[in-house]
Length: 213
Image (cartoon, rainbow, N blue to C red):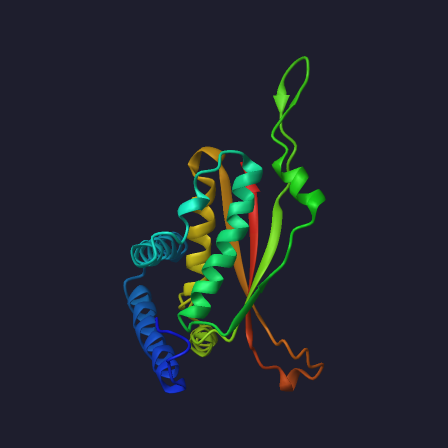
């Protein structure tokens, strides 16, 4: 990416255009080769997310260094929220987005989700529910390419923020906690104009769902 403070608008436009060209070619190859898309999409996004995070950590080793040392589920959840903020700040500093904001999960939902077990005379079980929060990415420079590719019917598009946040959050829990991270993106007009003809996408809203196995 590039530094937001030093990147002219035409550099961001060029990056967006290059993303569109590359991902259109990727999609055309997938269609031509009749690739089974659902499994490919999951593998591709996970692989790219890991590569971007690995490259980022080489440049900034301390980025997530302190987030993997905690052991309780509540501590790892706190770290996952911090990781979301850290990655969003990184995206902003690198010029990929303009601003960001994250919702705060209610304390009651956190308590329910992190409850690990209750003992009975016959068995053990845990009480949990899916925990949701959202991360809004404003002014994503690849927004136009994302929208255009989907309007053309393609299902693979450059969603670097979602891939990077997903991988960072996943690493905070580790495999032993059996937490599944589901993430969907929604396109929002932050001006909230009631006239559909004036609808203009300005924000990518990531809805993050943490699911206990």
